[in-house]
Image 1 (cartoon, rainbow, N blue to C red):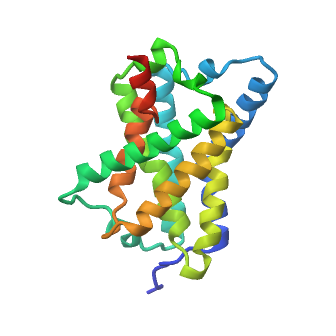
Image 2 (image 1 turned 30 degrees about the vertical axis):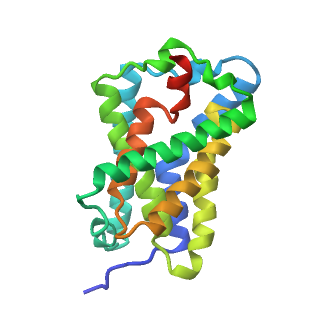
Length: 231
């Protein structure tokens, strides 16, 4: 019987990137070009209807299935990840802490970079329309992105982790450019580094808090000060 694959190869990460984020990077680049050409606005790029959420849910599910099938073809040992996905006593505390740390870091970045201007958003951004489509998509997206960045990108031999970590930051940036280059860099470099450091330092290692904290960010936005300043 063929031995199961426990460490991925460099071509595995490239193929999985293409499967899971190829379309996202392409569409984000087009939206960024439209943003720089002023044929669209940032608010338009950040506004999603229920139909768009469900559409993204279906499309992302397809890419996830293809990625899963590729890993099955490669005879990957999924227990490498499943043993790091578990309920634990301090799960809620970790999720909320991770969300707050990330949100405050993004707020600090906004304060320094934009001189408070992002802290005066529209009502639709302050009170996002939270419906079933957003909840379902956020839960899937939290898993989808972090299983790649903390799962795929860290499933390499230890001597290669620093390189796959840097690669993960670049990919995080690349499909968030529709939010503007500054926000894409912050989400990629700042958020990506926070998640990586916390995952490496928190023991025992558990992917679940990162899935859920990411989902919270998708639902409420990655900010705390915005709500406080609004009120």
